[in-house]
Image 1 (tube, one colour):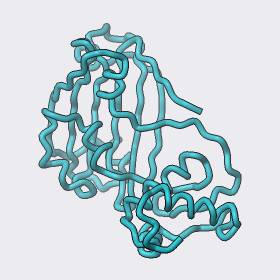
Image 2 (cartoon, one colour; image 1 turned 45 degrees about the vertical axis):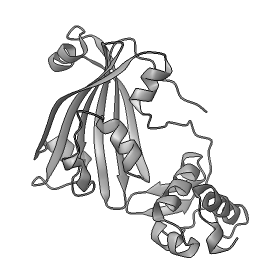
Image 3 (spheres, rainbow, N blue to C red; image 1 turned 180 degrees about the horizontal axis):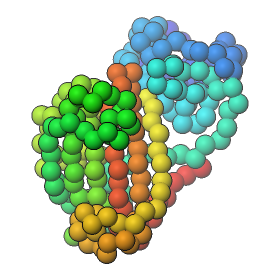
Length: 233
């Protein structure tokens, strides 16, 4: 292919896959970064990001923040965990979706969030809390911190019309993340917001996403009792 032909993430991904299979990039080898590849292919960096992200999700690339991207030494088959748009999830079940903004403020984060986002204690972050509803019933409580130095537009965004979940998925490319699942007893705040009893069992999803500028956001999603997670293999 010529540089002009790399105008979609699929074409970029196909070429990267060819180089891996042909052993032009060997297992464990560090590959060029997104900026270098975008110059080589003559396409946008976001296009390269999307292509590499797909190969990382399939287990062929190992992407680590600040350490770059390597060809996986021992490729494994991975479960697919998409960052879903909660509105789509609710509407896909034939339910009526609504989002309610509970609070939005720029403030210093507590120590645990500072540590999660690898920041200094002086950084001010955008803290957004909101409730996703399905058929007028509490569905997911979203408690999110966004780094405005990485996502400058977030502070100016009116999250009364669109949730941070949906806005970030649609507007902010990322190239890595981590996710944790747990079951915890509902706190007093969670019980009040989700309309359940204090101490009731809740399914919790905690997630960080990042790009080359740093950690974009960390979020805790507290799911109402009865929530079910579905993924693919």
